[in-house]
Image (cartoon, rainbow, N blue to C red; front, side):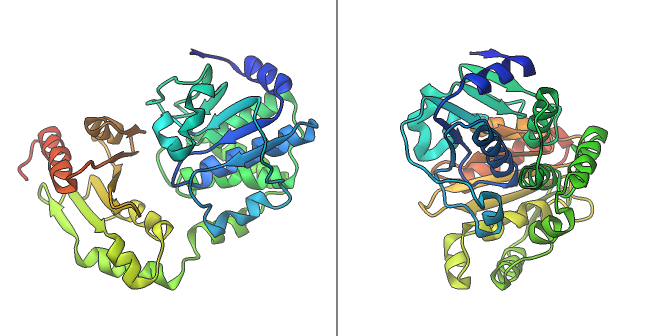
Length: 318
């Protein structure tokens, strides 16, 4: 249960065999991009490796897996990427006590793995892996460049969020020179949405609630709304970013009902609010500007817990 540097990461990867790469539930571009880039590197070393997730992979990420073997084997090495807490493994938590290496960028990481390479200042864990690759002298071909660029762009909101520092811009530029299809990936990730998403958008904003004199917005998406529109759980991920784009809003809260009926809460904040600190009230965490937590049995009571804390931090009335 210790934190390690890049040199030690290189040693672990070189010695690894039959590698299972774990990603978090409700997979996003960063965990999948990082996972598939790492898988391609391990395959290039002649190792057996595969990437897995407890939830279905959204079709928009299919290109990341092109040419990758989807094997089933008993792993000798288990690596988690972008997974701060073993609870995020979902049904794959059977491997929680077997994680040999975790590569992550969440300050809330539980340090559950035997060894952890943690870079909380990185805007995406894909940037951490890019730095590892550069340090190890790894040849980054186009599929790996596409995967790493996907991770960087999606976790920074196409490089618009405050977590997009100078280093990640330089890394993205390097990946473009190495063949990353930045234009195609940007269109696929940020400018292409199914019709059902726009219908969900209309439904969600019809129920928009505002608190703290317009400083906090709350959007709620139920399974019934998804079923009525023929959408799936992935269809409302884009709502999370929209929740804080309303003028004057310092905290955007999106409440999303999962298929099993429980609710997940996602936060996006502006200064001075710390999204991770707020979500820790309900056992969650993440980053300063983006974090999440589970709502428990009573989602409205959980919402009130968060709102009360936010109101206290902002010095305003609900």
